[in-house]
Image 1 (tube, helix red, strand yellow):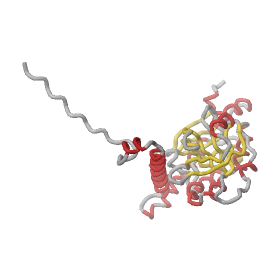
Image 2 (cartoon, one colour; image 1 turned 60 degrees about the horizontal axis):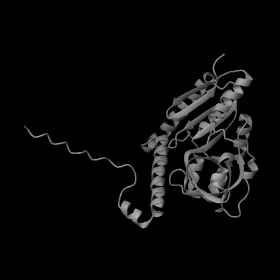
Image 3 (cartoon, one colour; image 1 turned 90 degrees about the horizontal axis):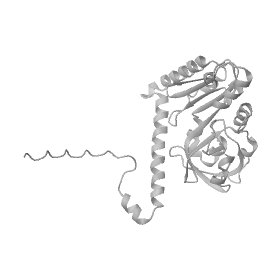
Image 4 (cartoon, helix red, strand yellow; image 1 turned 180 degrees about the horizontal axis):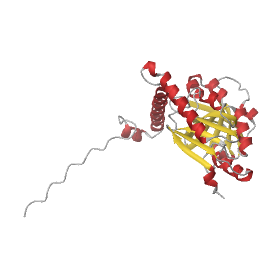
Length: 289
């Protein structure tokens, strides 16, 4: 019998991680599905988004029964001090269906769809239960990827684990609604409309066909932007990268502003980020005897 890891086919295609379950008996398939959070998934890094026509195309791929796309931030800072968290901006109903299929991380989607008192009010959020005490249950904030600002949220429920973080562990996972984010922060529409992760369920999904589909959609996206001088996919990646750099600079400035005056003076005028190290002068040769 193949080891469990052999049932999971994971490859990298043009900056995306593509993972698909191989065929197995039902019991082992359930275990393997819980290892990756889906029957198939495609995840880009924080600066690469899915091609715009990928979601419509992958829904027609043989074997795919359902799927959900999300914005997945693997390095979210919650409440301004809890770093290393994971932020998921999702369609609540689709995410709930994925969690039911996987068998853990289930949520009540209606909790995330509750109307807020005002468009700029804190959005409802669900957090993994092992981290709820660290994050708190009041009105808090999370830094969105890039320079899209601070999203204010209010924890309305907890869940045990998440398909987006199958290994679990101490990392907090915060789940919010795509529509709620857009209502509170209209300037984040680009972020919300350009997910970087897709999780699919079904039977007999071919890893080769999924990778080929992703490759075709990436190529079509590149061709579509060629008339503007820079391919569309590259423009989106550059835009996300620039936004993330601006966001890191803004967060660094906020941290410095919270320091004592003497600490601020020591860093005043220094650029944020890693600086080049000046070479040391060569040591003088020893005097001749």
